[in-house]
Image (cartoon, rainbow, N blue to C red):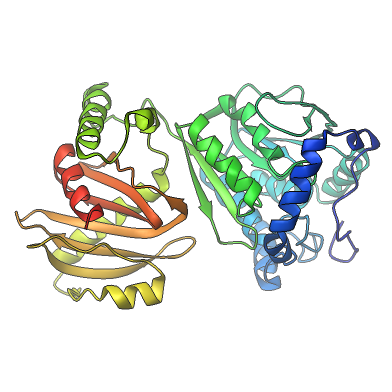
Length: 422
Protein backbone atom coordinates (compact mmCIF):
# COMPACT_ATOMS: atom_id res chain seq x y z
CA UNK A 1 0.00 0.00 0.00
CA UNK A 2 2.20 2.78 -1.31
CA UNK A 3 1.71 5.51 -3.89
CA UNK A 4 3.26 3.10 -6.40
CA UNK A 5 0.09 1.03 -6.11
CA UNK A 6 -3.47 2.00 -6.96
CA UNK A 7 -6.02 2.15 -4.16
CA UNK A 8 -9.75 2.12 -4.62
CA UNK A 9 -11.69 5.34 -5.21
CA UNK A 10 -14.54 4.05 -3.05
CA UNK A 11 -14.32 2.55 0.44
CA UNK A 12 -14.25 -1.21 0.78
CA UNK A 13 -17.68 -2.78 0.59
CA UNK A 14 -19.28 -3.70 3.87
CA UNK A 15 -19.83 -7.35 4.84
CA UNK A 16 -23.06 -8.93 3.61
CA UNK A 17 -24.61 -8.96 7.08
CA UNK A 18 -24.46 -5.14 6.99
CA UNK A 19 -27.12 -5.23 4.28
CA UNK A 20 -29.63 -6.06 7.02
CA UNK A 21 -29.98 -2.49 8.22
CA UNK A 22 -32.95 -0.54 9.46
CA UNK A 23 -35.05 1.35 6.94
CA UNK A 24 -34.47 4.58 8.91
CA UNK A 25 -30.70 4.19 8.44
CA UNK A 26 -31.23 3.88 4.68
CA UNK A 27 -33.32 7.06 4.70
CA UNK A 28 -30.60 8.89 6.62
CA UNK A 29 -27.99 7.77 4.10
CA UNK A 30 -30.07 8.89 1.15
CA UNK A 31 -30.91 12.22 2.74
CA UNK A 32 -27.37 13.06 3.78
CA UNK A 33 -25.98 11.80 0.50
CA UNK A 34 -28.13 14.38 -1.27
CA UNK A 35 -26.86 17.30 0.84
CA UNK A 36 -23.29 16.13 1.50
CA UNK A 37 -21.99 16.12 -2.06
CA UNK A 38 -19.99 19.39 -1.66
CA UNK A 39 -18.04 17.89 1.24
CA UNK A 40 -17.62 14.56 -0.53
CA UNK A 41 -16.37 16.37 -3.63
CA UNK A 42 -13.86 18.36 -1.56
CA UNK A 43 -12.60 15.16 0.05
CA UNK A 44 -11.40 13.82 -3.31
CA UNK A 45 -8.22 15.82 -2.75
CA UNK A 46 -5.96 14.46 -0.06
CA UNK A 47 -3.95 17.67 0.16
CA UNK A 48 -0.94 19.06 -1.66
CA UNK A 49 1.71 16.57 -2.75
CA UNK A 50 4.40 18.89 -1.38
CA UNK A 51 2.77 18.78 2.07
CA UNK A 52 2.60 14.99 1.89
CA UNK A 53 6.30 14.77 0.99
CA UNK A 54 7.17 17.14 3.84
CA UNK A 55 5.21 14.99 6.29
CA UNK A 56 7.02 11.84 5.15
CA UNK A 57 10.37 13.61 5.48
CA UNK A 58 9.45 14.73 9.01
CA UNK A 59 8.68 11.13 9.95
CA UNK A 60 11.76 9.71 8.22
CA UNK A 61 9.67 7.67 5.78
CA UNK A 62 10.10 7.23 2.05
CA UNK A 63 8.20 9.81 -0.04
CA UNK A 64 5.98 7.08 -1.53
CA UNK A 65 5.27 5.30 1.78
CA UNK A 66 1.63 6.34 1.84
CA UNK A 67 -1.07 5.41 -0.67
CA UNK A 68 -2.70 8.08 -2.78
CA UNK A 69 -4.71 10.15 -0.30
CA UNK A 70 -8.19 11.59 -0.71
CA UNK A 71 -11.65 10.11 -1.22
CA UNK A 72 -12.29 7.70 1.70
CA UNK A 73 -8.69 7.90 2.93
CA UNK A 74 -7.29 10.42 5.44
CA UNK A 75 -5.90 13.68 4.09
CA UNK A 76 -2.61 15.36 4.96
CA UNK A 77 -4.32 17.81 7.34
CA UNK A 78 -5.73 15.01 9.51
CA UNK A 79 -2.41 13.12 9.45
CA UNK A 80 -0.57 16.24 10.59
CA UNK A 81 -2.92 16.59 13.55
CA UNK A 82 -2.07 13.02 14.54
CA UNK A 83 1.66 13.68 14.38
CA UNK A 84 1.34 17.00 16.22
CA UNK A 85 -0.67 15.56 19.10
CA UNK A 86 1.57 12.51 19.50
CA UNK A 87 4.65 14.74 19.63
CA UNK A 88 2.95 16.97 22.19
CA UNK A 89 1.43 14.49 24.65
CA UNK A 90 3.69 11.45 24.04
CA UNK A 91 0.81 9.02 24.62
CA UNK A 92 1.17 5.69 26.34
CA UNK A 93 -1.97 4.30 24.67
CA UNK A 94 -3.59 5.37 21.39
CA UNK A 95 -6.82 3.82 20.11
CA UNK A 96 -7.55 4.11 16.40
CA UNK A 97 -10.91 3.35 14.80
CA UNK A 98 -10.49 2.73 11.08
CA UNK A 99 -7.04 1.59 9.93
CA UNK A 100 -5.00 2.75 6.94
CA UNK A 101 -2.69 5.68 6.24
CA UNK A 102 -3.32 7.04 9.74
CA UNK A 103 -2.05 3.76 11.21
CA UNK A 104 1.36 4.07 9.57
CA UNK A 105 1.67 7.75 10.46
CA UNK A 106 0.59 7.26 14.09
CA UNK A 107 2.85 4.23 14.60
CA UNK A 108 5.86 6.04 13.17
CA UNK A 109 5.18 9.20 15.18
CA UNK A 110 4.90 7.14 18.37
CA UNK A 111 8.20 5.43 17.61
CA UNK A 112 9.81 8.86 17.30
CA UNK A 113 8.15 10.41 20.36
CA UNK A 114 8.38 8.24 23.44
CA UNK A 115 7.07 4.90 22.22
CA UNK A 116 3.69 3.88 23.56
CA UNK A 117 1.22 1.40 22.13
CA UNK A 118 -1.15 1.85 19.19
CA UNK A 119 -4.35 -0.21 19.30
CA UNK A 120 -5.98 -0.11 15.86
CA UNK A 121 -9.34 -1.58 14.80
CA UNK A 122 -10.95 -2.02 11.39
CA UNK A 123 -14.05 -3.87 10.21
CA UNK A 124 -12.38 -5.50 7.20
CA UNK A 125 -10.36 -8.59 8.12
CA UNK A 126 -8.43 -8.72 4.85
CA UNK A 127 -7.50 -5.06 5.09
CA UNK A 128 -6.26 -5.60 8.66
CA UNK A 129 -3.95 -8.38 7.45
CA UNK A 130 -2.66 -6.25 4.57
CA UNK A 131 -2.07 -3.27 6.86
CA UNK A 132 -0.21 -5.43 9.36
CA UNK A 133 2.16 -6.58 6.60
CA UNK A 134 2.55 -3.02 5.30
CA UNK A 135 3.56 -1.81 8.76
CA UNK A 136 6.04 -4.67 9.12
CA UNK A 137 7.63 -3.62 5.81
CA UNK A 138 8.28 -0.25 7.45
CA UNK A 139 9.68 -1.80 10.65
CA UNK A 140 6.61 -1.05 12.75
CA UNK A 141 4.54 -3.28 15.02
CA UNK A 142 0.99 -2.36 15.99
CA UNK A 143 -1.79 -4.07 17.92
CA UNK A 144 -4.16 -4.08 14.94
CA UNK A 145 -7.29 -6.21 15.07
CA UNK A 146 -10.34 -7.12 13.04
CA UNK A 147 -13.45 -5.60 14.69
CA UNK A 148 -16.62 -6.36 12.71
CA UNK A 149 -19.50 -3.88 12.77
CA UNK A 150 -21.96 -6.01 14.69
CA UNK A 151 -23.21 -4.12 17.71
CA UNK A 152 -25.30 -1.09 18.61
CA UNK A 153 -24.23 1.61 21.06
CA UNK A 154 -27.07 3.07 23.09
CA UNK A 155 -28.01 6.53 21.92
CA UNK A 156 -26.29 6.25 18.53
CA UNK A 157 -27.48 4.87 15.16
CA UNK A 158 -25.77 2.35 12.90
CA UNK A 159 -23.56 -0.66 13.62
CA UNK A 160 -20.44 -0.22 15.74
CA UNK A 161 -17.13 -2.03 16.12
CA UNK A 162 -16.93 -5.18 18.23
CA UNK A 163 -14.08 -3.84 20.39
CA UNK A 164 -12.30 -5.91 23.01
CA UNK A 165 -9.23 -5.77 25.24
CA UNK A 166 -9.12 -1.99 25.31
CA UNK A 167 -6.68 -0.18 27.59
CA UNK A 168 -8.27 1.21 30.74
CA UNK A 169 -6.72 4.63 30.09
CA UNK A 170 -6.42 6.16 26.63
CA UNK A 171 -4.35 9.26 25.82
CA UNK A 172 -5.39 9.73 22.18
CA UNK A 173 -8.45 8.51 20.26
CA UNK A 174 -8.22 8.64 16.44
CA UNK A 175 -11.62 8.29 14.73
CA UNK A 176 -11.54 7.61 10.98
CA UNK A 177 -14.34 5.06 10.73
CA UNK A 178 -16.81 3.57 10.18
CA UNK A 179 -17.70 5.23 6.84
CA UNK A 180 -20.71 7.54 6.65
CA UNK A 181 -22.47 5.01 4.40
CA UNK A 182 -23.19 2.94 7.52
CA UNK A 183 -25.00 6.00 8.94
CA UNK A 184 -24.09 9.72 8.73
CA UNK A 185 -23.83 9.89 12.55
CA UNK A 186 -22.34 6.45 13.22
CA UNK A 187 -19.02 7.85 14.47
CA UNK A 188 -20.81 9.43 17.41
CA UNK A 189 -20.62 6.03 19.13
CA UNK A 190 -16.91 6.62 19.63
CA UNK A 191 -17.89 8.51 22.77
CA UNK A 192 -18.34 5.11 24.41
CA UNK A 193 -14.55 5.37 24.87
CA UNK A 194 -14.43 8.93 26.22
CA UNK A 195 -14.73 7.85 29.86
CA UNK A 196 -11.31 6.21 29.43
CA UNK A 197 -9.68 9.43 28.21
CA UNK A 198 -6.90 10.62 30.52
CA UNK A 199 -6.72 14.26 31.74
CA UNK A 200 -5.17 16.20 28.89
CA UNK A 201 -6.08 13.40 26.49
CA UNK A 202 -7.15 14.17 22.93
CA UNK A 203 -9.89 13.07 20.50
CA UNK A 204 -9.34 13.49 16.75
CA UNK A 205 -12.33 13.05 14.40
CA UNK A 206 -11.74 12.97 10.65
CA UNK A 207 -14.23 14.33 8.07
CA UNK A 208 -15.49 16.70 10.75
CA UNK A 209 -16.79 19.35 8.33
CA UNK A 210 -19.49 17.02 6.99
CA UNK A 211 -23.07 17.59 8.18
CA UNK A 212 -23.31 14.25 9.99
CA UNK A 213 -20.10 14.80 11.92
CA UNK A 214 -21.19 18.35 12.81
CA UNK A 215 -24.31 16.92 14.43
CA UNK A 216 -22.12 14.41 16.25
CA UNK A 217 -19.88 17.21 17.52
CA UNK A 218 -22.88 19.16 18.81
CA UNK A 219 -24.09 16.17 20.81
CA UNK A 220 -20.61 15.43 22.13
CA UNK A 221 -20.33 18.97 23.49
CA UNK A 222 -23.56 18.46 25.40
CA UNK A 223 -22.71 14.98 26.66
CA UNK A 224 -19.04 15.67 27.54
CA UNK A 225 -18.75 19.24 28.87
CA UNK A 226 -15.28 18.61 30.30
CA UNK A 227 -13.89 17.94 26.80
CA UNK A 228 -13.22 21.06 24.72
CA UNK A 229 -14.03 20.49 21.04
CA UNK A 230 -13.01 22.69 18.14
CA UNK A 231 -13.37 22.22 14.40
CA UNK A 232 -10.14 22.87 12.49
CA UNK A 233 -10.22 23.69 8.77
CA UNK A 234 -6.54 23.10 7.94
CA UNK A 235 -7.25 20.06 5.75
CA UNK A 236 -9.58 19.21 2.90
CA UNK A 237 -12.17 17.51 5.14
CA UNK A 238 -11.91 19.20 8.53
CA UNK A 239 -10.70 17.77 11.84
CA UNK A 240 -12.54 17.98 15.15
CA UNK A 241 -10.03 18.25 18.00
CA UNK A 242 -11.25 17.50 21.51
CA UNK A 243 -9.10 18.01 24.58
CA UNK A 244 -10.09 16.75 28.00
CA UNK A 245 -9.49 19.32 30.69
CA UNK A 246 -7.51 18.38 33.79
CA UNK A 247 -10.25 19.30 36.26
CA UNK A 248 -7.95 18.92 39.25
CA UNK A 249 -5.52 21.51 37.91
CA UNK A 250 -7.96 23.83 36.17
CA UNK A 251 -8.39 26.11 39.18
CA UNK A 252 -4.99 25.87 40.85
CA UNK A 253 -4.69 29.66 40.98
CA UNK A 254 -7.54 29.84 43.53
CA UNK A 255 -8.27 28.04 46.81
CA UNK A 256 -9.68 24.59 46.07
CA UNK A 257 -13.20 24.82 44.73
CA UNK A 258 -13.66 28.52 45.44
CA UNK A 259 -13.55 29.81 41.87
CA UNK A 260 -15.67 26.94 40.63
CA UNK A 261 -18.54 27.72 42.99
CA UNK A 262 -18.26 31.52 43.18
CA UNK A 263 -17.52 32.03 39.50
CA UNK A 264 -20.36 29.78 38.38
CA UNK A 265 -22.81 31.40 40.79
CA UNK A 266 -21.84 34.91 39.68
CA UNK A 267 -22.01 33.93 36.00
CA UNK A 268 -25.41 32.31 36.26
CA UNK A 269 -26.85 35.15 38.37
CA UNK A 270 -25.57 37.80 35.99
CA UNK A 271 -26.70 35.96 32.89
CA UNK A 272 -30.18 35.29 34.25
CA UNK A 273 -30.49 38.89 35.39
CA UNK A 274 -29.47 40.21 31.98
CA UNK A 275 -31.79 37.84 30.16
CA UNK A 276 -29.00 36.36 28.06
CA UNK A 277 -29.95 32.81 28.97
CA UNK A 278 -33.05 31.03 30.17
CA UNK A 279 -33.31 28.77 33.18
CA UNK A 280 -33.44 25.64 31.04
CA UNK A 281 -29.92 26.16 29.67
CA UNK A 282 -28.15 26.87 32.94
CA UNK A 283 -26.92 23.30 33.05
CA UNK A 284 -24.90 23.86 29.89
CA UNK A 285 -22.59 26.56 31.29
CA UNK A 286 -19.47 24.37 31.40
CA UNK A 287 -16.83 25.84 29.09
CA UNK A 288 -16.19 23.94 25.89
CA UNK A 289 -13.73 26.18 24.04
CA UNK A 290 -10.46 25.89 25.89
CA UNK A 291 -8.28 26.29 22.79
CA UNK A 292 -10.14 29.46 21.80
CA UNK A 293 -9.81 30.84 25.34
CA UNK A 294 -6.07 30.06 25.31
CA UNK A 295 -5.68 31.95 22.04
CA UNK A 296 -7.61 34.91 23.44
CA UNK A 297 -5.43 34.97 26.56
CA UNK A 298 -2.27 34.75 24.47
CA UNK A 299 -3.38 37.66 22.26
CA UNK A 300 -4.12 39.74 25.39
CA UNK A 301 -0.66 39.07 26.82
CA UNK A 302 0.90 39.91 23.46
CA UNK A 303 -1.04 43.17 23.33
CA UNK A 304 0.17 44.07 26.82
CA UNK A 305 3.73 43.27 25.77
CA UNK A 306 3.44 45.51 22.71
CA UNK A 307 2.28 48.39 24.91
CA UNK A 308 5.50 48.15 26.89
CA UNK A 309 7.84 47.96 23.86
CA UNK A 310 8.93 51.26 22.33
CA UNK A 311 9.99 49.50 19.12
CA UNK A 312 6.50 48.09 18.48
CA UNK A 313 4.29 50.73 16.87
CA UNK A 314 0.68 50.38 17.88
CA UNK A 315 -2.11 50.68 15.32
CA UNK A 316 -5.03 52.45 17.04
CA UNK A 317 -7.18 52.79 13.88
CA UNK A 318 -10.10 50.37 13.89
CA UNK A 319 -11.68 50.00 10.45
CA UNK A 320 -14.44 47.46 11.09
CA UNK A 321 -15.57 47.46 7.46
CA UNK A 322 -12.08 46.63 6.19
CA UNK A 323 -11.71 43.87 8.80
CA UNK A 324 -15.05 42.39 7.73
CA UNK A 325 -14.03 42.44 4.06
CA UNK A 326 -10.59 40.95 4.69
CA UNK A 327 -11.29 38.39 7.42
CA UNK A 328 -15.04 37.85 7.32
CA UNK A 329 -15.31 38.88 10.98
CA UNK A 330 -17.88 41.50 11.93
CA UNK A 331 -16.77 43.21 15.14
CA UNK A 332 -19.34 44.56 17.60
CA UNK A 333 -19.79 48.30 18.01
CA UNK A 334 -17.84 49.72 20.95
CA UNK A 335 -19.72 51.39 23.82
CA UNK A 336 -19.47 55.16 24.19
CA UNK A 337 -16.29 56.29 25.89
CA UNK A 338 -14.23 53.19 24.96
CA UNK A 339 -10.95 53.85 23.16
CA UNK A 340 -8.87 51.66 20.85
CA UNK A 341 -5.13 51.54 21.50
CA UNK A 342 -4.11 48.76 19.09
CA UNK A 343 -5.59 46.55 16.34
CA UNK A 344 -3.83 43.40 15.06
CA UNK A 345 -4.71 40.52 12.76
CA UNK A 346 -3.46 37.25 14.25
CA UNK A 347 -2.80 33.98 12.42
CA UNK A 348 -4.53 30.95 13.94
CA UNK A 349 -4.47 27.31 12.90
CA UNK A 350 -7.51 27.59 10.64
CA UNK A 351 -8.32 31.27 9.89
CA UNK A 352 -7.21 34.86 10.60
CA UNK A 353 -8.33 36.26 13.94
CA UNK A 354 -8.47 39.86 15.16
CA UNK A 355 -7.29 41.29 18.48
CA UNK A 356 -8.25 44.79 19.60
CA UNK A 357 -6.63 46.41 22.65
CA UNK A 358 -9.19 48.58 24.43
CA UNK A 359 -9.49 51.06 27.27
CA UNK A 360 -12.95 51.36 28.80
CA UNK A 361 -14.56 54.57 30.01
CA UNK A 362 -13.31 53.63 33.50
CA UNK A 363 -9.70 53.13 32.37
CA UNK A 364 -9.71 49.31 32.33
CA UNK A 365 -7.26 47.82 29.84
CA UNK A 366 -8.91 44.93 28.00
CA UNK A 367 -8.52 42.93 24.82
CA UNK A 368 -11.29 41.87 22.45
CA UNK A 369 -10.35 38.72 20.52
CA UNK A 370 -12.48 37.62 17.55
CA UNK A 371 -12.25 34.42 15.52
CA UNK A 372 -14.51 32.36 13.31
CA UNK A 373 -16.98 30.10 15.07
CA UNK A 374 -17.51 26.70 13.50
CA UNK A 375 -21.32 26.99 13.44
CA UNK A 376 -23.76 29.85 14.12
CA UNK A 377 -24.69 29.94 17.81
CA UNK A 378 -26.64 32.05 20.26
CA UNK A 379 -24.87 34.46 22.58
CA UNK A 380 -24.20 32.47 25.75
CA UNK A 381 -21.25 34.13 27.51
CA UNK A 382 -19.10 31.96 29.72
CA UNK A 383 -16.26 32.73 32.10
CA UNK A 384 -12.71 31.43 32.24
CA UNK A 385 -9.48 32.33 34.05
CA UNK A 386 -5.99 32.47 32.60
CA UNK A 387 -2.96 33.67 34.57
CA UNK A 388 -4.82 36.23 36.67
CA UNK A 389 -7.04 37.52 33.86
CA UNK A 390 -10.78 36.99 33.53
CA UNK A 391 -12.12 36.01 30.12
CA UNK A 392 -15.77 36.39 29.13
CA UNK A 393 -16.42 34.67 25.82
CA UNK A 394 -19.45 34.10 23.61
CA UNK A 395 -20.55 33.43 20.03
CA UNK A 396 -22.72 35.52 17.75
CA UNK A 397 -23.63 34.28 14.30
CA UNK A 398 -20.46 33.04 12.63
CA UNK A 399 -18.01 34.71 15.02
CA UNK A 400 -16.65 33.89 18.46
CA UNK A 401 -15.57 36.68 20.82
CA UNK A 402 -13.55 36.87 24.03
CA UNK A 403 -13.08 39.89 26.28
CA UNK A 404 -9.98 39.56 28.45
CA UNK A 405 -8.50 41.64 31.24
CA UNK A 406 -7.67 41.93 34.97
CA UNK A 407 -11.27 42.54 36.09
CA UNK A 408 -13.70 40.77 38.42
CA UNK A 409 -15.95 38.09 36.89
CA UNK A 410 -19.18 40.05 37.26
CA UNK A 411 -17.55 43.12 35.73
CA UNK A 412 -16.28 41.03 32.81
CA UNK A 413 -19.81 39.78 32.14
CA UNK A 414 -21.20 43.31 32.34
CA UNK A 415 -18.65 44.61 29.84
CA UNK A 416 -19.19 41.64 27.54
CA UNK A 417 -22.93 42.35 27.71
CA UNK A 418 -22.35 45.89 26.53
CA UNK A 419 -20.47 44.59 23.50
CA UNK A 420 -22.90 41.81 22.72
CA UNK A 421 -25.89 44.12 22.85
CA UNK A 422 -24.12 46.80 20.85
